[in-house]
Image 1 (cartoon, rainbow, N blue to C red):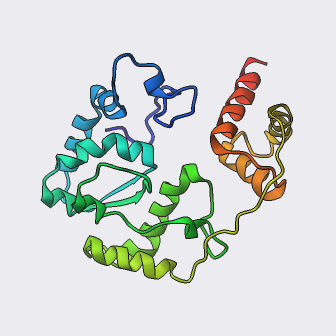
Image 2: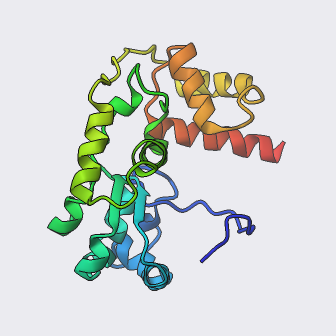
Length: 224
């Protein structure tokens, strides 16, 4: 287990399709994300973490990463599954029914006008986790998954989903120029840059495309 203050080497691997650093694009044979993760010792490490505690376990992951650990989760005993709550991973598959019932009903309302935790799709799971911890878990730490799900739904009941805006489309070249211009303002943080593009400049940019162009601009700045 890695402490939050422990420095780790930088890396560029992901299980999100469409990225140039997609791990399965770098492996031979018919391997899956779960195979790669298990080969790194991920399943063993999680078993050790889960076995050390009797407390509630909250899993906050986007869909590709939740699918990656789904085979591991399917091996857990029912007593452990009852201690799990899942946020994020709205398009995950392969979970046991008991774990599907542990999924909390966070959806696009988290990005609507009433939300105090708006953000990007890439940080949806962490924002949902914060909401659950601050609004629900702090008041009802010992409730069942069913009760927690009802309390989340109650907390979001008056929230509306965001209104989709049609942004202006620009070329890769123009978009990279905008990123360079606002790089210092955003402190080089891609999440903030994406919010500037969408909210202030009304520029349409699919998230994977944005990640690719931002990585290119970051590399330019590293080499300059």
